[in-house]
Image (tube, rainbow, N blue to C red):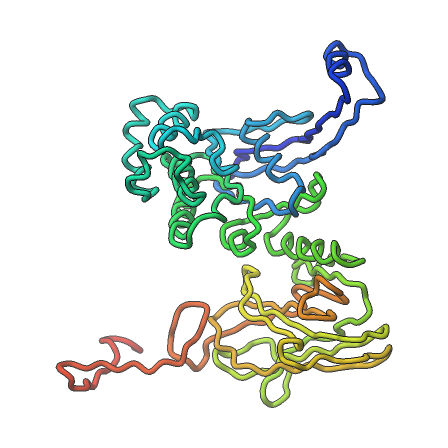
Length: 423
């Protein structure tokens, strides 16, 4: 049985513009004035996170994500509602938050760890591991003002994760790290998750949200607008980004298999059908590893379009992109499409991908991106399965046609299967 380790109950945050110090003073005494302006950056935010669960928070810049995390960690007070947390929370929020640029990395760690509630003896015990994990060498004893942003992140992350917390909160800090250290951080995060740590992560890295999180919530203009599976929420997020650039209509429909299909666009054209065919022209849902198949899109034009680009994206079961392209990149843009015109795009490829479930997202636009003119964007337009029926056993997301040979003392060997294999 899982229990909520974090509850956000009807949280809101407002800022007031008084216009003068007299009005501010009067408000302290309980006097009200219609000339005081109140701006709500968060309103009616509510969700709970179970022990050991990983939740991603997504939203456009200015949506209120960082403000929410500051309220959760207690570094900022809420104007309404409350946050109930069980256990110790460790947070990596704004880069260098709480650090003194005139102190060394070691001194900042000692000071910040004390504010986090660690005893002096415990801090001294943790320091060697923090220094070793950060891997900044002699800079650990240099003033923080001499650090690059990546070095500051190394120290901040090493400190926050020196002892496994009950709740770990990360707000975009990892975006400034080098590739090696980011991989190292995610390895530690996964280890904490396996040991029961609850994770709350804000990131524009969709792959990170999909790979790490069980659930995602989306904040838009200070309000919670979605709470569901990472793919469902990120599909809606993509649609909202497109809507910001064009006059869109966003629709979400629950399919027969329970998946939420997100469609957005202005409707000048639509994809009537998506299917996969084998080389004999038969519609299939099960694809063999390495088999040659055709992805077929039937498109109907509803209004005149000067340039029509058809695109598609293959995604794995987590929603992460496997491969995508469009007719702009292929040099096959449709020009002067008229109402009632029907077009069929056929993309032939060898399914050199791993075993599992995959989905197809489709897009109709005027250029290489749907952010300019989004006629239609549909996620989960088709779901198909890849199985290994004829290839040698392998693991991973990609199948490579390999030829393996073994030599001993420059003489080729004749080797057979392992003893007992195939019995």
